[in-house]
Length: 207
Image (tube, rainbow, N blue to C red; front, side):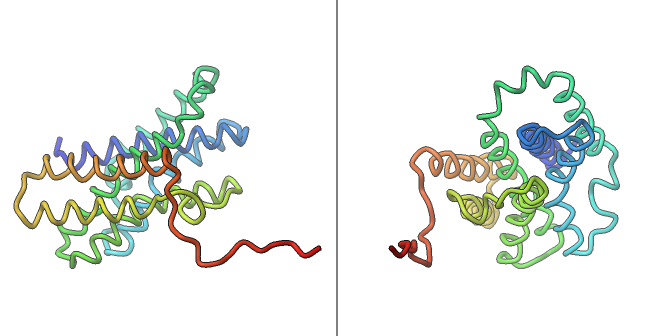
C-alpha cells in the first residue's frame, strides 16, 4: 500500500469518527450517523478532485474508502454507549483529520503539476470542506468561520510541506513534520484560545 493511500485512509477514519460524534451529539438515528460520517469523510476530497478534473473521484475508484466509513459508523452505532465518554475528544479526531487530509490534498495537487499557491488552497479545501458540510447539515455554524484557528493551521502545514518538498526532504519525513505542525497549531489554538482578529466590533445594545 502506498504511503499516500495509507494517509488518506487514516484521514478518512479520523473524519468518520468526527462525523459520527457530531451526529450522535445531535441525537440522529443510525442512517443519519452514516450519512454525516460519509459526508464528513469525503466532502473535501470530492471537491478537490472535481476542481482538478480527477474523475471518477478517489473514493469512487476504491471501495476501501466507503467500506472504512461504513465500518466506522457501524462500530459507533454498536458501541454508542462507550462513545459517549469520548464526545469531548471530537476536536482531537477533527484535528487529526485536517492534518492528514491537508497533506493528501497537497500531494495530489503536486502530482497534477499545479502551482504551489493552488496546492495550498486545494490542501486546505481537502481538509476543511467536509467539516463545513458536516456542521451545516447538523445546523451548526462551521467551525472554520467563527471559532479558533482552523484553516490557518492547514495553510501553515501545507506551506511547510511544500518547503520541505522543495528541499527534497523524504516524503515520509515531510508528511510527519507538516502534519505535526498542523496538529500542534490546532491544539495550541484550542488550549490558549488563539483566534484571528475580528473585523468588526461587538455592538453594545442601546438602553
